[in-house]
Amino acid sequence: MKKRKIFRWTIIAISFLLVISITFIIGSSYFEHKKLVEQEKEEYPAPGTLVDVNSDGKKLHVYAEGEGSETLVFMAGLGTASPVYDFKVLYKKLSKDYRIAVLERAGYGWSDITSSPRDINTVLEETRRALRLAGESPPYVLFPHSMAGLEALHWANLYSEEVKAIISLDAMVPGYIEQIEDKVSLSPVITFLARSGLMRNGPDIFEKNFVAMKKGHLTEEEAEIAKTIFFRRVQTKNMREEVEMIESNSQIVSNQGKPDVPFYAFISTDSSEEESWKESIISYTKAIDGGYSILDGHHYIHLDYSELIAEKSRGFIEK
Image: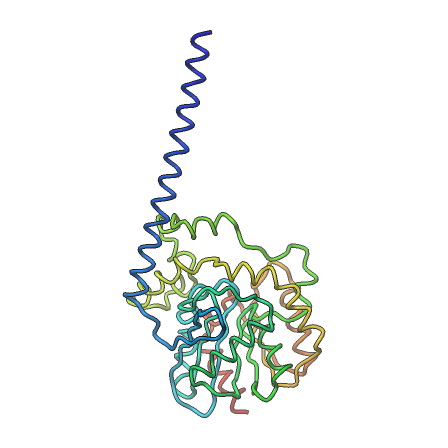
C-alpha cells in the first residue's frame, strides 16, 4: 500500500515538473521571439512605402521600382510570407520596361496585422487606397497569384477603368472553391509553432518552406532579410481570417458575372491534387475570351518560368 502511494506521488510530481518545464520552454521561446521580431524590424526596415489605409492605425507596404507607361501590380496568394521576395525573380525581368508595384496585404511581409475584416470588399478598398497613397496611379495591369485571383476579378468588375488587363499566375477563379470537397484550411499546429517562436528552432524551416529560397532565387543578403519576414509572417491572424472568408468572397465574385478586361492565365500542372483546379481556370478563361498557357511546374509558377512569363506578358501588354 505504501509503495503504491509513493508511486502515485512520484507520477504526480513528474507530471507537474513536466508541465512546468514545457510552460517555461514555450514562454521563453515566445518572449525571445517577440524580442527578435522587434530587433529584426529595426535592422531591416521596409524597402518600400508604408501607408495608412484604415482607422486602426495599421500600415500596408507597397514596394515599387522601374519606369514605364504601364504599372504592373503583383498580388500575392494566400500565406505567401514575403510577397516582395516571392515575386522578385519575375518583376526584375519586367521593371526595365514597366513600373512595377508589389502590394503586401495586411498580415503579409512588412505590412501590419490589422483588425479590419477580410471580406473581399474591405481588402480591395485597402489595396486601392494603399497604391494611391504610395503614389501609384491606375490603370494597372494586375498580376494575381493563387487566391488573389478573386480580388483581381472583383476589382475589374467594380472598377474596370482602373484595370487595363489581368495576367493570372495560376490564380483562383470563382466557382472552384465551392465545388471541392476538402475545404481550404491552415494547420493550428503550425500556427502555434509560429506564434510561440518554436518554429525558429527547426532545422532549415525557412530554406525548405519559402519557395523562392528553395528554388535558389535569393541572394545571401535577400535570404537573410526574407528569413526574418518569414518567421513573423507564417499563418498570421489575417491569413487565417482570409481562409474563413474565401467561400463567401468567391461567391460575391461569382455573382458579379464576367469582367470585361483582357485576361491571360498561366496555369501550372501540379497546382492542386485535383484536376478541377486546372479545368476551372481553363473554363473561366474561355468563357471570357481570354488566353492561357499550361506550364509543367509548381503552383508558384512565376518561380519556375519567370523568363517565359515575362516574355509572354510583355507581348500581351503591348498587344
